Image (cartoon, rainbow, N blue to C red; front, top):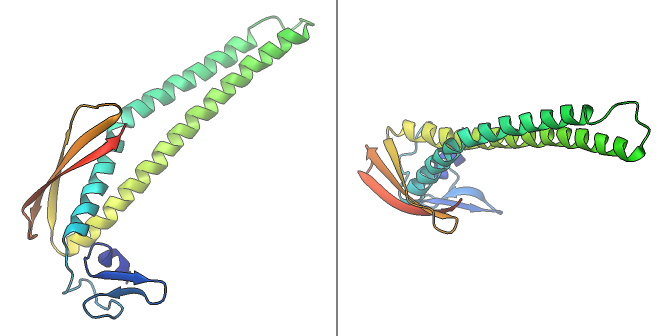
Length: 185
C-alpha cells in the first residue's frame, strides 16, 4: 500500500533522507491496511484540497479560450501556407520572391506547430491537475469525508486576482472553510 498518499494529508508526517517517511506519533514507518486510525487531518489537508480544486477550476475556466486560440492559430497557419503558395507564379526566377514565398509558407507551418504545442501543453496540465485532485479524493473517500467547493473570483487588479475558496465539509471537524488566494493571471 502507498502510505505516502495518506501521510501527505496528515499533520503527523515526517520525512527525512535517513529514515524516509515516518509517523510523528509512533516514530515508525506507517503500517495500516486501508485507513490510519491516528490520521490528523487539519491545515495541510485543507490546503491541499483547496489548491487542487482551485487549480482545476482555473484550468477549466481557460479551456474555451485555449481552444479558441488553437483553432484561430490553425486557421492563420493554413491561410499563410495557402497565401504563400499563391504569392506569385511558380515560373518566376527572382531569388528574393522565392525566399519570400518560402518564408510565408514556413511561417504558416510555424503557426501550426505553435497551435499544437499550446493545446498539448494545456491538455497535459489539465490531466495532471485532474489526477492530483482525484488522488486526494480517493484518500478522503476512505475516511468518508465529503466536500463541496465554490469559488468567488474577484476583479483582476494589475494582473493579480483574488479568489475566495469556500468549501463545505461533511464528516470532518470543520463544517466550512473560506480561504483567500491571490493568483497571477
